[in-house]
Amino acid sequence: MHALASDLFPICRSITGDGVRTTLGEIAERIPLEVHEVPSGTPVLDWTVPDEWNISDAYVATADGKRVIDFNASNLHVVGYSEPVRATMALAELRSHLHTFGENPAWIPYRTSYYARTWGFCLSERELAELGEGPFEVVIDSTLAPGSLTYGECFLPGEREEEVLVTTHVCHPSLANDNLSGIALVTELAAALADRERRLSYRFLFIPGTIGSITWLARNADVTTRIVGGFVVACVGDSGPLTYKRSRRGGALVDRAAEHVLGQAAGSRLLDFVPWGWDERQFNSPGFDLPMGCLTRSLEGEYEGYHSSGDDLHLIRPENMEDSLNAALAIVDVLEHDGRYVNLAPKGEPQLGKRGLYRGLGGPDPGTEQLALLWVLNQSDGRHSLLDIAERSQLPFGRIQMAAELLREGGLLAEAHEEPAE
Image (tube, rainbow, N blue to C red; front, top):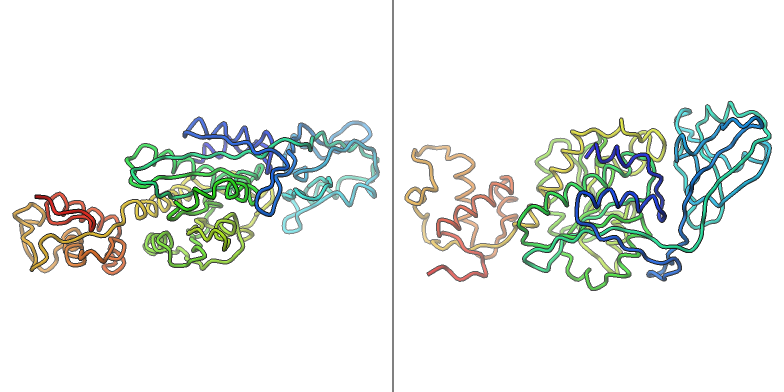
C-alpha cells in the first residue's frame, strides 16, 4: 500500500482531468476497474458537472528567467482549477494571488477554487520572504473547458444482490495521508475480496470529493436500494488513533460491526455522525440515508500538515496502513458472515465430544474456542445474530463465526431460514 501511494504521489490530481485518469489507470493494474466519464454540464442532483481542468506548467520567474515558484517542483504550488495566465507584474500586483501556510513557514498550502474562476500560486512563508519586488513573469499553462468528470468503479458480485459500498476520494494532488492512504487501502481491500468467495456483493468507488459522490448518486438511484452498509475511507496512514464515525442512522449493522471491531483495538475512537467531513455526508443525506460510516485515523484538520506539503510520504507509515486495512477487513467480515441461526439440538447441551467439537479433558476453564461454541448454541434460537452473540459474549466476531461454522458442519446448527438436513 505504501508503495502504491509512493507511485501516485507525484501526479497532479483535481476533481477532473488527466491526473485522475492516470491515477485510475494505476489502480486498474491491480483490480478490475470500470472508468466512467460524465460530460461537463450534466445536471447531477442540485449540482452541475464542472468544466474539466488540466495543467501542463506554471511558474513565477524573475527577469533573468529564474523560477522562484515552480509547478514542476511541487504541484501544490498552483491553486487547483486556476485559469490560464500569462502576464508580467510586480509583487504588489501579484501578492493578492499568493497563498501561504501560516502554521509552518516551511510548508506550501493546498488551495483550490473549483467553482469560482480565479488563479493563484501557493508557496511557503520562507519563499515569500525571499521573492523581492519583481517584476515577475507569471505563467499558468492550464485549460479549463468542457470535458468530463472521471471516476472509477470496481464491482465484485456475490451470491446475493445486497451490496457493501466502500468509497475514497481521488481529487487531491501530492498529499499522502489525504488521500493517497485511502486510495491505497481501498485498492488493497478490493484486491483481497476479489480473491474470496463472497456472500454479499461489493462496490468500490474512486471518486472526486463531493461532486463525485453526488454524480454517482444521481446516476445510480437503483443501486442505492441494494446497499446494506459501507464506509468512506480517508486519512488512514498517519499515527492518529483508529477512528470510525457512525452513519446518520447510528445503529446500522455497519456501525455495530465497526463498534465491535474497534472496541477490541486499544486507543481507538467511535464518533457519532455529524454532517461534516468527507463524502459520508452525501451518502447520509436524508434523501438517500444510506448506512455509510467513515473509517479514518486523524480527522480532517486534526493532524499537523493537513492540506499542506507537510502531508508527505513520511507522514504515512506502512504499519498504520496495515492496521487500518485489518480493521476494514474485520468490519467487512462481520457484514459478510453475520446471520441468524437455529440450534438443532436445543434441549439441554448437546454432547460435543462425540462430534469432535470439544476438547478431551474437562475442567473449569473450557477455553475461548469451547466457550464460543457454547455461546452460539445457547443463543441460536433464530432471533439472535452472530453479531448479537459476539457483543453479548464479548468474544471476537471471528471466533463466534468460526464456532458457528463448526457447529453447522457437526449438524448442530442451521441458518434460521434453512430446513434441517434429513
